[in-house]
Image 1 (cartoon, rainbow, N blue to C red):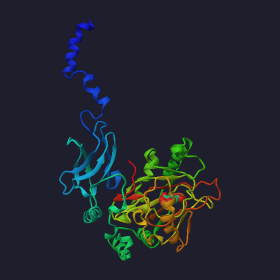
Image 2: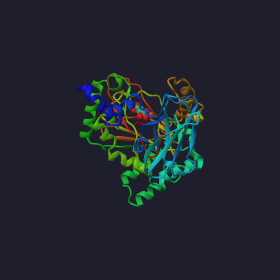
Image 3: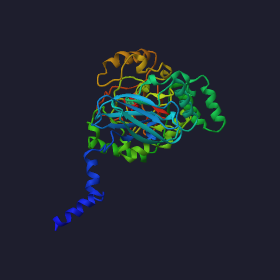
Image 4: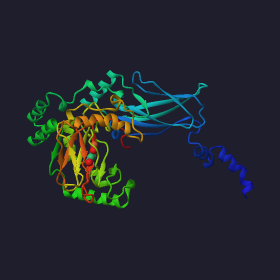
Length: 413
Ligand SMILES: O=C(O)CCC(=O)C(=O)O
Ligand SMILES: [Fe+2]
C-alpha cells in the first residue's frame, strides 16, 4: 500500500537517497547556495594567449556588489574588476602569458555590500613555451598589462614599441641568411621569406593538392545549399569559422604545408585562429588587418589566403599593395575611434581616411592565382577585394589567419 510505504519514502528522501531531494533545487536554481558561478572557461590553445571566462552572478545577489579575481602563486594578481549586479553574466579575460606554465587555479570573488563573499574557481592549463612567449610576457610585465580584464580587449593595454619582429627590422636579410646557413630553411623558402620582408607577402604555388581542395569545395557547396550562417548564394557575404563544422576545411586550416611558412615568419609555432570563406569576391575596401586581428607583439599575425580554384579576371580578385606593410599600424586607441558596434561611419572618417591617404603611395597588384596556391600576407599589408565586374564568377578563397601569441579580437571558441 502506498500510504503504508510513505513514511519510509519520506525518510529515504531525508537521508539523501531520493533523487528528488538532491537534484530538484539545482534544476530550479543552478547557483544552489552560491552567488557566483563559472559558466565556461576557454581553452588557451584556441585563444592564442587570452583566455575567456564567463561568470554568472546569482539573481539573488544584492545590488552594489563588486567582483575580484586572483591567481594563485602569481604576484600582484589580485584585482578588483568593478561593480556587478544580480543576474549579470560577466565576460572576463586572462592574459595567460602572465601566469606560470602548468595547471593554474584562478579564484573569483563576489563581495556584496553586506560583506558576504561568494567564491568560484576555474582551472587553466597554461603552456606558453619558447622565446616569443617569454618576450610577450616580459613586455606585458614591463608595461603593467593587467592579468585580468573585463569585457573587450583594447590595444592600449599593450606597449607595442618595445619589440620589433625580425622581418620588420633592419637585419631581416641577415636573419634569413643565418637560417639558410644553419640548414633550417631551403633556398626556395629563403626566397619566399625575402619576398615577404620586401613586399609584405609571399606566394607559394602548387603547395596544396587537388584532393584536399576538392573535398573542401564539396563542403562549401553543402554550406551554400544549406544557407549556412544565412549565406545567400551569389552574394559577397563571408562565411565564418567553417572549420568548426567541416572536417575537410579543418584539415586544410591545420595543414602543415602552409603552417610551415607562418612558423618560419613567426619563429614560433603559428596558431591558426579563424577561417573566413568567400564563395564570391569580398569587394572589401582596402584595409590593414592589423586593426581587426591585432597581435601582440606587433607583426605576429598573418593572413593565409588559399585559392580553391583558378581565379579569373573580373571575379572580384584580391588586390595587394606591395610595400604598404611598412606603413604605420593604425589602431583604434590611437586613431581616436571607439570600438564599432553597428555604425561604421566614424571608423571610415578616422581609420578609413588614414588608409586612403597611405594607399595613394602604392601600386595595386591584382592577384590571380591557380588552384592550390597559397598567399601569406603581413598583418599590416594593405589589401582589398576588387569589384565583381562579372557577378556570376566564383572566386573562393579560404583565409585562416595565424597568430602565435595574442589575438586582441574575440577569437573563436
Ligand atoms: O579575399 C578578399 O577579398 C579579402 C579578404 C580579407 O580582407 C581578409 O581575409 O583579411
Ligand atoms: Fe583583410
